[in-house]
Each structure stands twice: as C-alpha cells, then as structure tokens.
Length: 170
Image (cartoon, rainbow, N blue to C red; front, top):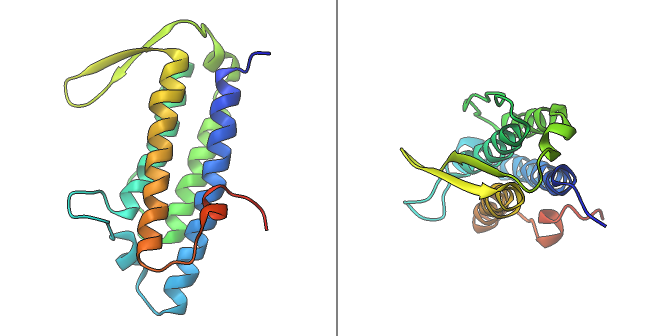
C-alpha cells in the first residue's frame, strides 16, 4: 500500500495544528491566571540567539503553507507577521490550515518520483526528491518549530506535556 504525499503531509499537519492550538490556548489561560502580559510569553526565547515563541509559530505556518503550495505548483497565501496575542497566533494557524486544505490534492501528489527545487537560505537553492522534501525538509521544519513552541512554554511554567504536543485527547 502506498500513501500519497498529500496524505502524509495533511495528517501530520492536522495533528500539529491541533496540538499547537491547544498548547497556545493553555498558554493564554496561564498568562491570564498569573496576570502576565501575553507579550512577555510571545517574545520569550530559550536562548538569545533563538527565535521567540511568536516567530516559532509563524514559521510553523510558513513552512507548511509555502511547502505544500510549492508542491502544488501554486503561489502560497501570504500570512502577515502581525500577531500580538495568543488569539492572533491561533487564528494564524487556522488560516494556515485553511490554505493547506484549499490546495488541490492531485497537484500535490503529481509526479511523486520527481524532484523539487526550493530556496534554502539567502541566494541558495536546494533540490530534493518530492517525497524527501515533504518528509525531511518541510515536515521536519514544521515539527522543529512546533517543538520549540512547546519547549519555550514549558520553560516558563505553562502546564503542558507530551500528550498536549501529540494532540492526544483526554
């Protein structure tokens, strides 16, 4: 049995979007309970040379929307980096999910053994087989940045655990 690129990507992204939505909701409640301005949490980072929480969420949406749009041969929806609250970040993830689900599955799955070239840093381009691009670049980046959101929130005391990151009910 073979599984399509769109099924692999959408299944993982759905879980990641749900997990982050729940984690961000818990973070908003934690900030409110402790009377901490959400901006403090949104600008928190684990180390000075690391992106802040807000940017980590933006990168989850950027890698997913741009990655699958690129596979579908479409121009990605542009999501402005203007979030100033947990509600804004949750809305961004919902917009990313909507953009990903609006892409034509047939176009994402076209030419499964072909290659795809994509920007990989300033002035650099990389080429990978389409399946490796989905699994080893796009999803790897999405999961890395989602894990950083989780780690940042854990580091400041938000009560989230592995079940939250995996979006396991109950």
